[in-house]
Image (tube, rainbow, N blue to C red; front, top):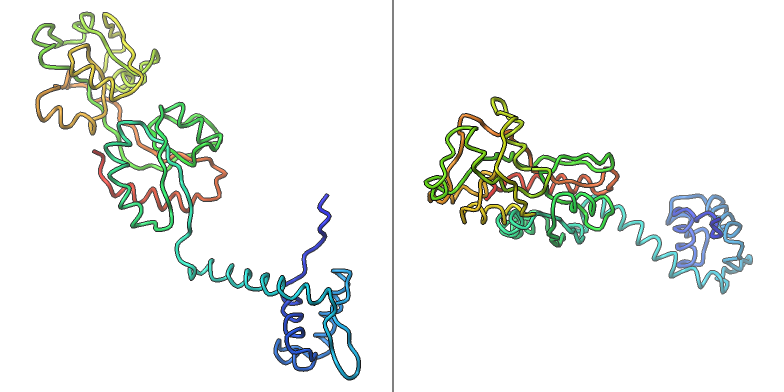
Length: 302
C-alpha cells in the first residue's frame, strides 16, 4: 500500500507559492487570476490534504508557518519540474540523453554498424550506442530479457514478446573456392555427395535458404557437415577450401569480385531474408527505435 497519499495538484502549489511570495492573499489572487475567496479555498484544500497549517493569518498580516517555510523550496521545484515536462514534450530541452545497447553478429557489427556510429550520433544526438556481439538465438534471448535494448538480426522471430523493424533485404549465395572446384567439381546436385557443407549449427540454418528455394532439390545430400558457429568463420573456412556454404551476398561481395569464391548451381536463387531491428513489443521507446531503424535503412550493407 502506498502510504504517501494523493499528490497536491499544481494549481494549488502555484497559489501557495504566490501567497508565500507576496504574503498577501488579495495580491496573490490577482497573480494567479483567481478571486481572493477561490485562492483561499485552494490554500485550505492544500492544508487539509497535507494535514498541516501553511499560514498564520490575521486581519492585519499573513505569515508562513514552519511547515509553510519548509514547503516553499519543494513547491518551487515541483512547479519547475512541471514546466520542464512541458518543455521536454515540445522538444525545447534538446535531444533526449540515453544509453542504447544494440546487439549484433560479429561480422555485421564490424562491417556495417561500427562504421555507421558517427551517422547515428549525428542523426540522434544525446543517444550513446553501445554494442554487444553474439549469435542469433543469443541476441533474441538477451533482447527478451532486456539485457540488451535491441538487436540487428536476420533470425526469424518466434518469440511472441519480440517484434522486429525491417532494415535491409539479405540475399544469399551458395559458394565455393575455385581451387576446391578444380579438384572436386560441383556442377550438379549429384556432385554434392563429394563435398562438405559448412554451416553455423546442426540445423543448417544458412543452407536452408538454398534448400527451401524454388527449383531446389531437397534430396540433396553432402558427404559431411561441418559447423563453424559464426558466419565469418564459415566464410574463412570456404575460402580455405574446407567446404561449400550458403553465405550472405553482402559479406562475400568482395570475394566474388576478386574470384576468391564462385557461385554454385546458379539456376537456384536462395530464398532471401531481412535484417531486422528486433526489440521487445512492450518497449516504451518503440518510436525512438523506429527513428534509429530509419537511419540504419539509409546505410547500405557492407
